Image 1 (cartoon, rainbow over the protein chains, first blue to last red):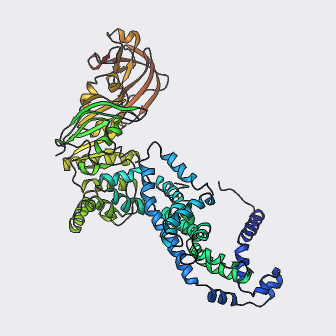
Image 2 (cartoon, rainbow over the protein chains, first blue to last red; image 1 turned 30 degrees about the vertical axis):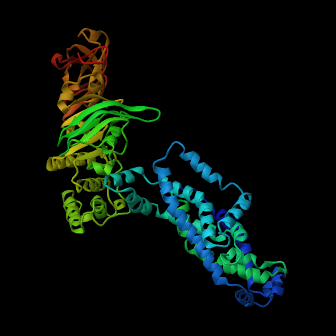
Length: 276
Length: 331
């Protein structure tokens, strides 16, 4: 029997949910609102700021001062490049762990995940020196490689979880049907795991797009993505709230739009296998 | 061709030996059923033949070729799984065509063979549907269709009917038998259902704890079980086993009498019994009784009238009695 919820309780729960949602979204909303005001108005308290004149000036100034399209291009290359590379490595790895596990597979998975538990700053010096020695500082190649490796444990884990939901008999059937390992992965495994792969892809793109620590440390101009572009408005001359907000809005807009349109796919993928 | 020879085949996992040592020859065109209780190793044995599991020892020959180390695809075998194992993202036509596509067949050949298989299995009207839109029986037919288009040396069936309801199971059983008559290809069929084994097999292999207890035709196993395990496993309802003084009187540790070999009388007989339950099946009545020698089941005519608590007398047919020694072997 379905659980009965009274109308008043339902309304109360809905209100609480909206309030929590609003609190979570408020910083983004406030950033967007500040970006449409002048520097003087942006630092005012909320009501006077909202009452002050609205303007696109901050966007114009940001566009004039910075090369937004270069940073945007770099963000796209880093996030998509690292995601595609991570998937190419992770799909066969997750296949092996899910369908032909060894005695140490569980340990290996835990070890991979444990690498994400260490703070990135812990390896900053060796990474920086390594990048410098290899000539990878401020290069897209270096950042794509770094982001691929940084997110690989998570990608392998997610794909492993999705693949475990696929009945092994289906893969055995395709082996009996004469499929090579490549055909097994491309014709059967990948199409069956599309929701999981899509959500992994989206999550990895979002993580790579928003990555700030490594991009700030290892890039300066040529390979700098949008996170570097935002940080450049927090300058020694002082904080320029309106311009910083405009830069932030321009940086997060693409990923917000992507997230908005793919939310159904994301939720489906993230809950894939929760129920049979 | 489809002669399969297993020599000293064994299979061990880390903690346990599933199949200690098996020798078995399956002749070309035979319908062989592996039967046994859960965990007896019958599915493992089938998977070893298929190549889905590696053997721990011994050799597997198919048509004179040692395939022990070969991949499943190279063995020219087709398998039908218990869960059907259809590709859910493909249509029926694409499912049946998949092995042909993997073999690099031309589109014309694939179309022709898919249509022929679909016609044989009454699937012509469902070719564009996906597995999720089919009933259990139709799905199983698609799985069989996917197997027959390859024209394999042998078909392997791993409990293919256990997910179907009783009525459909009966129909599919007949269809598989007819398919065997039509194709005359070797079929190896795994089941825990001895009725399936009896009705379908040319040859039954009874397995217990990874060992072959007996190999023979259904009637051979029914009439001449080699030991108590086979006698107990083959036949429905099960054979009655009687020990103690009654068995000793026949010079045995245990005697076995099938329900149809107990003569029933309401007035006199060897063993006095009280009726517990009478199952009226129409053509037959199975009477479950508590007797002088323990619980027994007897088969009577459909017309036989027996009620709970009635007293009846049972007399075993001496010529149809099975006698077992202390090691449970037949005497």
